[in-house]
Amino acid sequence: MPELQIIGAPQSNYVCVARIACREKGVPYTLVPARPHSPEVDAIHPFGKIPVMRHGGVTLSESRAICYYIDHRFDGPPLVPRDPILGARTEEWISLVNTHIDPLLVRQYLRAHFFPNTSDGSPDRAAIDAALPKMEEQFTLLDRAVGGTGHLVGDSFTLADINLLPILFYMTKTPESSEMLRRATKLEAYYRRHMARPSAAEATPPPFPGRQA
Ligand SMILES: N[C@@H](CCC(=O)N[C@@H](CS)C(=O)NCC(=O)O)C(=O)O
Image (tube, rainbow, N blue to C red; front, top):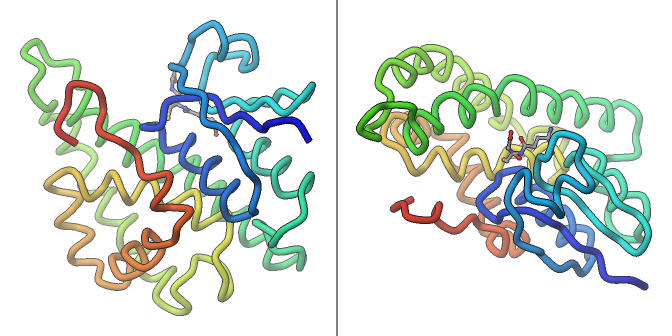
């Protein structure tokens, strides 16, 4: 069997998703460090984003497609339940995380802290303050969602949880979001419990180069 390569920077929450998915499925992989828009990434992703994947002659871009391949190409516990309703619920949450939660929490809020467009490199207060009210709503939604079973879907750990965990990891690194997580007690318990999984521990993002968190 050829080596499966996950190509991308370990700080990327989407690279983490692909890495956790491999481990949960029991699929050995090699992380090949690469930045977005580098030649090895541009050769696979039409817009230069990470992660990309190489497995023998198969190359793929987009974390959801990569996770589909991992889930269906290999034996091991399903990452998405095969039951149609639970499977659809999992896809629903993956989409909500990727189209609403990641854009607000990571692309707007986290970026305003770590990669601000300010002249002196200080956090972009306007962008942070603009994000906070909607973030409160999303933390409340997530707290309620995991409150029942300790999972986003059903009573097992699915690809929906895998998509959310790396984002929550970053929410512990900045003041406003860590306070929100502290107040969302069920979500915080969910985060702590699932981050202790070997798959998540192994894929924990290292600090951004040249930064504290
Ligand atoms: N829809 C993509 C999103 C991947 C993504 O946004 N990756 C970020 C790093 S976390 C990236 O490559 N950013 C570079 C850019 O947007 O130019 C996926 O699910 O794989």
